Length: 637
Image 1 (cartoon, rainbow, N blue to C red):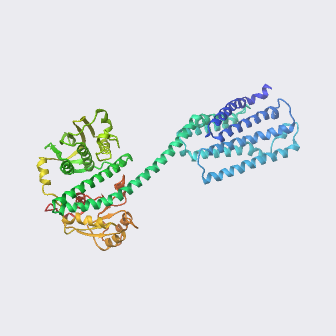
Image 2 (cartoon, rainbow, N blue to C red):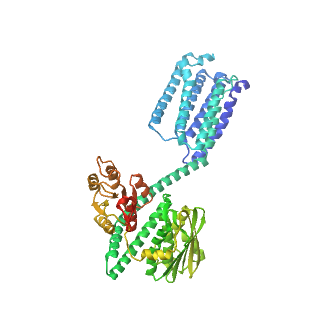
Image 3 (spheres, one colour):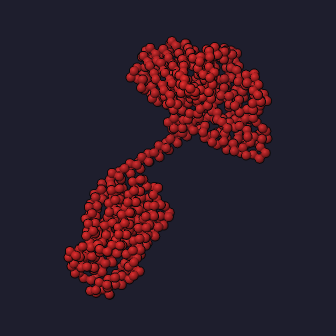
């Protein structure tokens, strides 16, 4: 008996391991609704197949206990059949790792029919052999072809198919699943190869698969791992929902930006003409109030859009050479008006040796400075605002050291950390009448972080606050800024003055809103430039084919064909007059990524609404032929 059981030693060990695994997967399966039922069924099939193989060896081929011949033949045929069934379930389990495809669906159906055919063949072989069974063992042998199919070919096919499924879909697996599958196949194939060359008579046909199942169980079927996968699935679903919500938010912001900026463009633009041309001081005062309200509304919109850009990771620092004195002028002019409205003194002190030619993101530096100064004005009811600008220099680099002091309400020590949180406003009961969204300093903090700059604050509640900013910039010109106060008084003494004259230049302005065309005409009236207009993309295409323009200002959002669709047509017109003309996107779309998107579509540059008079003139100076432009009364050639 001991000699008869010797070949089964490893299969008996596999049986014990199999029982333990069945208990584990059954227990976990009742608790975990995500358990892989195919894997559980796989363990049962191996257990049943192992029992049949052991019974075949003990009662059939080398009988320890004699049983009738018909059951012996049945055990013999079933032992071969379960070898095929074992590898078939391996393919079913392999397919559970991947999403179904058309090709895999075809092979799954083919495999089912093949397994059904193998079962039918095993039954037929059993029936055919019944009349021939006798006491001699050779009478149990199956015919060659069915025998080889049951014993080798079917097993090799199913195992090879499972390997191909894992190999083709390996990129869809995480690292742990790939290592687990590779190890399990290595063990299974290694045991099969070993058994082929094994001369001891010991059976290993179930020892290899049960080891593979343990590898799969430990690697990818444990409850902790399945919980991890379930958590990852939930996180992926949450990410998709967040992405969808973010896309919806971006679309909403784009629409909101366009719908609000378009009427603001008309209000601010036409109001600018009232300020320029009205002779009545009272009317001019009213117009300045309109301008202040419009700028405040625009500031709120810009803050929301800028924060959206930063949080989406789409805000970029665009560096270029600029004059710091020009940047400072813009900020000081804007804040002076607001300080005057509240009867506040506004002092500006600038180091006369500060280099005027710098290299950095002029727009963002101006935004940082204006936001901090705006904050000082908003929270100061009487007294003064002081701005001082110094610098630290090292070779071609400098750090702008900006200090903004006020005599406002001050900040409690415990509230200072809240200053730079979005939508958070300190001492709300006392400051509920103060306008704004609470985003200004949050945006400043984030922009400075992107520039490797810093902001600090010192404050005494009820006395005032001082903000310290350090902004790294490159030096492009050693020419000092000089006596800034004198230059500022000179620059602002005459009111509005156009930056250039270009009576020989001709531009085309395309916008479906007539008031916007009126605004552009009015803002550029004193430059003398010749302006033609179009109210649709189709009309712009016709005019661009028939007449040459030095620059085209093209609105993007228009009924029917939009600007982005008209642009490539204008660029590719046969015998067109504007194949290389600079085409500037004129749009109210200012959400994150808008500039980059329009430039990638082929626009030469990008200008947002509401149109700033100075920004418009600077944009045209940049792209109009230099021989047609006279700056400040001096020919530019």
